[in-house]
Length: 145
Image 1 (cartoon, rainbow, N blue to C red):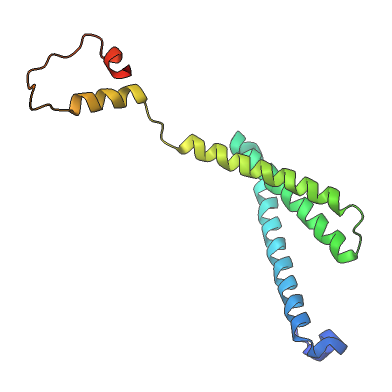
Image 2 (cartoon, helix red, strand yellow):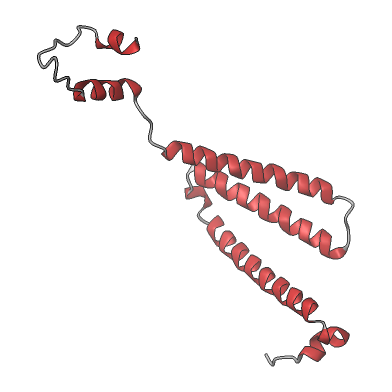
């Protein structure tokens, strides 16, 4: 395809650099969104092989993307009467995504076994004054005091 000149693409606005920059950024963003949606559509063929966690992530991603695109469409066409409802849905989906991330992070964090840690610390302590001290019969009672 032959490159159009700036004058033919923007007409009267050909000297408005800020407008041209915003328009070019919008075009690039729309192309990126199109590529992401194409990838997501290809992933849908594998949806039945996803784990539950992957399905939830996929579904929230799709919900957020569709709501975002609808909001952008409404904004670009000048229809703003329902945008508050759309933004409310976006906030709900975004909070669900944050909650999913928290759940995933908590699942991968190492857990500390307190009783085992106390046993390790007690066994590792050495008292030079009492090298032959006897161990208590019930070590859990000594640690709780």
